[in-house]
Length: 395
Ligand SMILES: NC(=O)c1ccc[n+]([C@@H]2O[C@H](COP(=O)([O-])OP(=O)(O)OC[C@H]3O[C@@H](n4cnc5c(N)ncnc54)[C@H](O)[C@@H]3O)[C@@H](O)[C@H]2O)c1
Image (cartoon, rainbow, N blue to C red; front, top):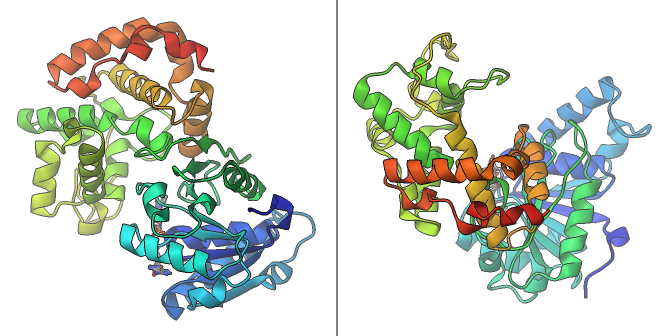
């Protein structure tokens, strides 16, 4: 038995690092009583300072809902390193701890074993199956995914993910809690993800374009093309940070591990390319090591993007996204291409590819036939749902 949304009062955020502290701030701003839990007191202190400063900035700008004062909001916040104590009266737990299945399983089981029977456990995992996180706990119907995008206060999207056992009621509560959280940049978009397949919706649709990027990086390296010319090829006119600066900023190791994850879970065609392997081997991981595509020793690089290499066909990226979105529809991860477009806009701040595909799917499918051969990557072949245009009716 799961409680109705109106009775969710107490939210526990477990793990208040990079993501958890932002999530806790949103829960406080939405009016919940919030307990911050982490393994170390200094991490909790750091999160509290982050939340206090964030709230004060919003108060100054008059952006707090109603006539709320920072002090009123903070009065609803508690902290503890003791998980069992934290969840005693929990209605809803959001877990944002390290991305490790064993630890997440243990936290899920301990949290649900020690909280009221109605309590929902929502994991912010970016890649682990919700079904696996819930496997060892006694009430897996109450476990869902709640995937925030970074930074949580600014990005509108929250994906609510069903594990194999998640109940409809738990999913609905997840959506309602998600929708109740303020967003500092527009209205929340909180779609249901019906299956916990790798990457859920947005990360999944954007995942395979790395196959084409790696092909381009390998080619550019072999031909000695300067990275800023490749960057000029792939960076759009209104992007605040160019694509390769962003890649360095995120870290080449992060990209490498993500590619390996998809190579294991989706297709070997995702295996990282030669150039990224070389970057990893040489420790050129980007900003964090002072060198990636660019030299960071004097701060953020400002590449001159006036000259293009002209070796990138940007329509290939669109075609790859559309094909993957069709896979998401085919697998039943989501049943509407409009939801996919909305989710990409809300999570990434750029439009999804599907509206364009409705009128152009034949050309996109032909392009994928050509490039899957050229790159020798069968995963990029257009799937039937795209080729036939049948996805169009899945609105
Ligand atoms: N960083 C992102 O961009 C991003 C985006 C979406 C989802 N996620 C997911 O969110 C989760 C957290 O990521 P992050 O970037 O905030 O990591 P982080 O390392 O910044 O924070 C993790 C926190 O969890 C704490 N922790 C570890 N074990 C714990 C335990 N047993 N009990 C309580 N606290 C514990 C750590 O002390 C740390 O403070 C991961 O599952 C990640 O995949 C991250």
